[in-house]
Every structure is written in C-alpha cells, then in structure tokens.
Picture 1 (tube, rainbow, N blue to C red):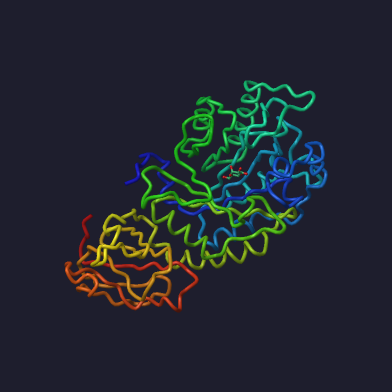
Picture 2: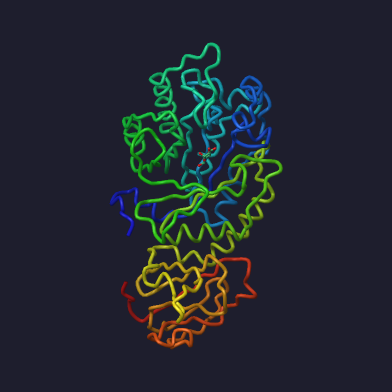
Length: 420
Ligand code: GLC
C-alpha cells in the first residue's frame, strides 16, 4: 500500500493523469528540446531564436480543452528548460519571452486560463542552465562543455538566481499544484529552496529531482518492475519516441503502446504525465491531437478502474505451472480493487478468449468488460490443464479478435469483499 501524506497533498492520489508540455525556443528548429547539446549548435547561434519566437496561434484554452477531453486532470508546463530560456516575465534574466517578437507572458496566459477553469497548473523548472553565466557548465551530462568567455561559474550565485526565479513562479501565477524540478546534474543540495516553495505555496507537491527532499518519484519513459508502487509516483512519458519538444519528423509511439504503459502505471498505483511538444506557432502536432482523442476515449471507458482503487495484483498467482512443471507463459494481469469490486487489467493482449484468475474461487455476481460494457461469462471450475488443482475463476468470451487495439479492463462485482 502506498504511504499517504495525510495532508492536503493527498489530492495527488485523485489526480491520476496529467498533460506535460515541453515548449520553448527549441520548437523552432524542431529537432529535440536539447538541440543545443545533442545537436552541437553554438550557443550564440541558438540564442538567435529569441528574435524569431512568435507563437501567434498559442491559445491556452485550446490546450486545456484537449487535456480535459482526454480525461486529464492537470497540466505541467516547462517554464525554463535546460537552454535557460524563460517563458514568463522574469526580472532575473533578459533571456525570456518578453524579449521575443511575441512579447507576452506565456505562463501568465496559461495560468489565467487554468485558474479561470479550475484546472490545476504544475511548473517544470530545469536546474541545468545553458545560458546563465553562473551555472557551472562542466560538460557533465545535460551540460554545456564548459564556460563561455565572461561566464562567472558560481553555484552559490546560481542558486540565488534559482531561488529568485522560483519565488517569482510561486508568487505571481496563483496556486501551483506541483513543482517539477529537472536533472540536478550539479548535485545542488539546499533544502531551504523547497522549504521556501512550501511556505509560498502551502500544499504544493514537489518532485524528487530537486535540491532537497521531494514528495514523489518520477520514473521516465519506462514502467518500473513489480506490480505496485510503495511510494507516491508520477511516471512521465512522451508521445514522441525521440524528443519531448516538438520534432518535425518525430516517430510517434502507437496509441496501444501508450495505453499499455498508462494502464500499467495507473494499475500499480502511480500517476501518469503524458507529454506533448507544441509547434513553434503554439499548436499541438496533429498526431498528438489524434492520439489524445483515441487514448482519451479509452481512458474514459475504463477510468473507474483507477478511481479510489488500490493495486491488488497480489490476489492472483504470479506464475502458472503446467502439469509437466513448465511455467506457462501467462497472461499479464494487474488488479485494482475498491470495496467489493475488482478490476482486471490486461495490458498485453490476452492469449485466448478466457482469463484464469488463480487462486480466486468465488463467482462474481457480474463480470463486465469496461471497454464496451459487454457482459462476460464467469465460471469457477476445474480446467483440464489444471486438473489436479482446486477449481478457480475463469472469465470467458473476451472479444480478443475484435478489440485488438486497446487495453482490456474487466470489472468484477462480488457480493462481499475478497480478502487479500
Ligand atoms: C529528461 C530530459 C529532459 C526532459 C525530462 C522530462 O530529463 O533530459 O529534456 O525535460 O526528461 O522528464
């Protein structure tokens, strides 16, 4: 069971699915959000994009519409990525959106729309900074290869800059749901920064990538091993295989792949932050809009399996032996549970039209496939392969040849509680 905070931060366990946005100057070259580093571009050349950034089609309400339609419950926005460019009206560097042809406070516009609509807003902030003269760029990972002429590398001064900027973010943009620090390459250790954030934004959640202890962990682009998380977790995943920022020739994951990872993470008790990299004009890529719709349709049909449930995969056996002692490649099953209701998640396509739930041996009063509301047959019996064993629960008639493009989730309602 995941430990709770026992304070207002417990809202974390209600907000399961969020929209991550990676947006900045890097949307112009449209290759990768770290094009400056991975593309070996000169800093002075990259910084010229500041004179081009003009997202005239940016409409924060449209972004929130897409998120809401997909069933997402919050948005996390890159206020400053590794390139150091700031998407808000900061007084601590000129390298910000006010000095672009666009000239408007993008974060302010997004925050206004979020607060007007009651849509929680989280902020991403990169600790590495490839622009600021005080950041100790030493060629470690996610860092520039060294200082520029005139740089004054000084971690103390840089942390003061971070503190000042984060204070702006926590005082000028209304309530902030989460602070998403990114990659603490320089291993800054200064818990007083998170303490300041908490005093300015009571109830805020802070991730585990910052300069002090955080509230939740952040596995990235993978599903950790196991069947349940033991501490608060928010996994993040991009639609694009290569980049978080907009990439013109991006290779996108299949809708099914995203549904599978989303289902696994949520069924393990984690939350899921799914990323879109808007184009330089502010629009979402067409591929992402379509994927959000498709994944959203699926999510709406099955989301009750995640709401106020907890991971309960321990109810079933991990491995099934056949009579010769060989482990039969078993169907991947994850369970979630609320009171007398058990949800069976099949994040991989089941092998056959039935699913066996050993050692459960009680009949549910109803078995329904949430994807299409189809009622399924449930039996408790002995199957020939397991003829020496006790009877166990079988759920039959899965439309495995029809519903091939999404993750199946079955709802089992029992008369009384199933004990673990
Ligand atoms: C990694 C990437 C970074 C991205 C982040 C999202 O740290 O380096 O570009 O913003 O993941 O979690």
